[in-house]
Length: 271
Image (cartoon, rainbow, N blue to C red; front, side, top):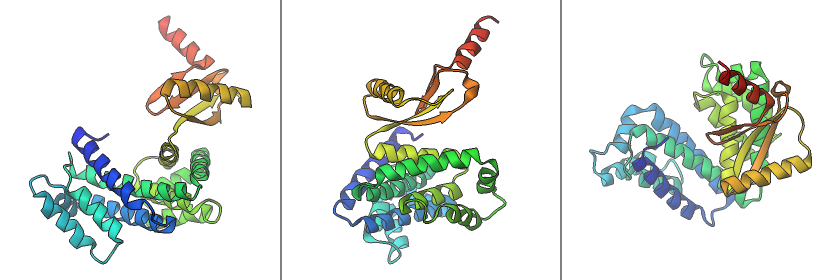
């Protein structure tokens, strides 16, 4: 989570990037996203560069000039301007700048998919990929094995999904899995949530004891949309150990309406 100053800085940089992407061809937006993600990783790995770009003791114009000089001739002008603008903003910590650049890169990618009418596909593919990774213990362990190089882990995932999913799905998943310290399945779930957010929706992760009918899915989505004030996409997984009912997670909120959950609560109350 960002502190207040970093949240404001990110929102300002986001507004500028969104304006810069208007009218940009989708292929160029993908390139911008790639460049931002790559530079975000460079900033994350290079402490001296992070300090030069985000140290509040350095004048804002000087920090922006560092960004422009480092990126001159290496990236598109939109990327160069976006990074310089971000560097000139006040960040609570230098690591927040690296994280923000990563968010902006992902959002540029998703903007490309949205412009082409492919955002729903990307969201669904990311959800299914996250579930596949979580269900395959050996694959998740291989993707999170830090004794393997980033290139090796990237090649493993890329070899499994290249040509089978949208290019934006592939790029986002490979970059996130190979650079994040979190569990690969969780990282891909986060990307699916970002895709939903780019479509103005929230994602509800629903674990059910059995399959939900179309009517049950519609009713649950409608109830959750009323609660959260936005359209809700359901991502449903089956877990017979719940015995009955459902567990719903939206963001950091968790609603346990399962029989197993109620029994556990009853046992706690009897202690």
